[in-house]
Image 1 (cartoon, rainbow, N blue to C red):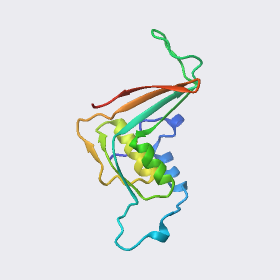
Image 2 (image 1 turned 45 degrees about the vertical axis):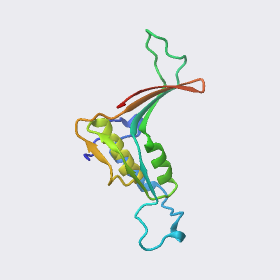
Image 3 (image 1 turned 180 degrees about the vertical axis):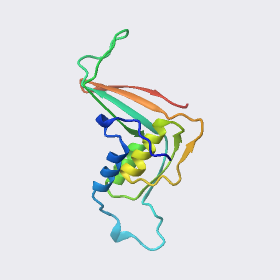
Image 4 (image 1 turned 90 degrees about the vertical axis):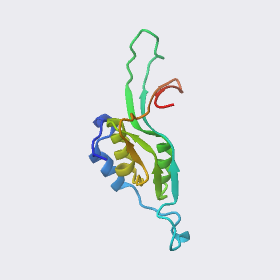
Length: 153
């Protein structure tokens, strides 16, 4: 997978930031005492759909049809099954993910964020030629969120 990120500095999605994040994570092996020769190279094997999540925060009002709303904050990260994979990897579990990644900039960003940023093994994952990445856009307002998703049914 090429090393190309779509997110700007405001989202922390550039490849150098992802590499630095992975380097600074504490390497703790919670299952070290239980490991035996011949164990698989991973503790957790996940499969599912990876979305690109884009979240807008800091809205003064809920969006109104026919108007434009401005958010004070925005973030992006891999979502869907990637949320669980990242959480398990951050807990120190050797995590492997089998997923289809879109053949687009969003797929490249999610791949880099998970492999380089979180240290997740993507060996069983594939980039699917001509397939676009599923995307979810969320808006947080007054403790609630509204989501719009686009993907494959």
